[in-house]
Image (cartoon, rainbow over all chains, first blue to last red):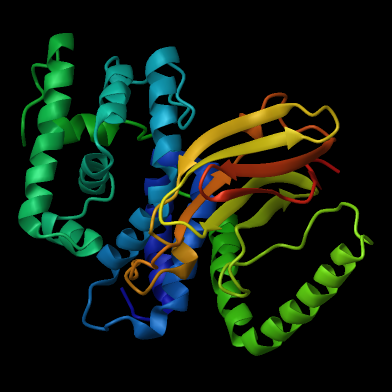
Amino acid sequence: VGHSFDAVFAAEFPALHRYLARRVGASAADDLAAEAFTVAFRNWERLDPERPVRPWLYGIAANVMRHHWRKERRMLRAYARTGVDPVSTEDEPAADARELAAALAELRRDEREILLLTAWAELTDAEIAGALDLPVGTVKSRLSRAREKLRNRLEPFGQEAVEAS
Amino acid sequence: VTDDLLTQFRSSVQLPDEATAQRVHARATDGRRKLRRRPLVLALVAAVGVAFAAAAFAGAFSTGEPPVATTGEQGPAPMTIAYSRTEGTLNSIAVTLSLDVSDATVRLQVVNVDSKEVVFEEQVSTTDTPPAALLGPTGDTSPEPNRSFWSGTLYPTDWNGGCQAGRYQIRYSSATGGSGDSEWFSCRG
């Protein structure tokens, strides 16, 4: 990733937008990504060139998402309740998708954040720690707790394959 | 594996197209152009603010959609609103509350001015975290004593009756943080 704003935008925007769209839908993702990149652009000249850009961007996005976690939870609950996902129009969603949506909705906000940064943004524990300004140990413990909650929630529904990775 | 299930979940969500990328890039970088013009913008905002205040005081103002308020380019107001429209139709409204109390529970309503119907209502809590537009390079900043914030986006699709042609108004009220109304705005047309 180059260190001009345009180069970073070109490299990171598609994945960041998709990450946000998976959380709150494409329409809201437009606004959230614009807000995140606006903050990034305004602070571009103050960014430490030694600092990895990607975790920094996702940290900004996490701050932006902070104001939308209720909406995300509402959408997950709606999916779990109705079987119709407000976010995605998947032709053949997995049979356990509704249960997973319910389980995600029940997670604490910080646990869901870390879990989805791992699974969808594919950040490492160290990158998440940098993004959220947390110790790596805290990230690991919250991630472990989130996975355990999902496992406990999904096991009764036949998800024997669900185990800690 | 938990991550395998999660990886499949909503995996049909597509990457954004080029038009979206260009639109978002323009929105993000437009902020910088505004910042560079800040002295001029501040002068204009101050002049317009004085004119508005004088006109409102004289009772010369009735209703109408206010100009977009951009956080950081004018002094703190209890409620600032930014409309997002496509061809005249309202897509979303970004609302920011900045209240003179450390914490507040706020009732936020969207009211159809013509029918007096509350078409949307939500209870929100302000925090000491300023909205993203005011945040520092890492997205955080020092708490400001005795001031709290809430920021969120309202979508007409969430409102009873959806996006109608009538006039709407946003209201906030809090036992400790006061109350206020926006000017009215239209959702369509």
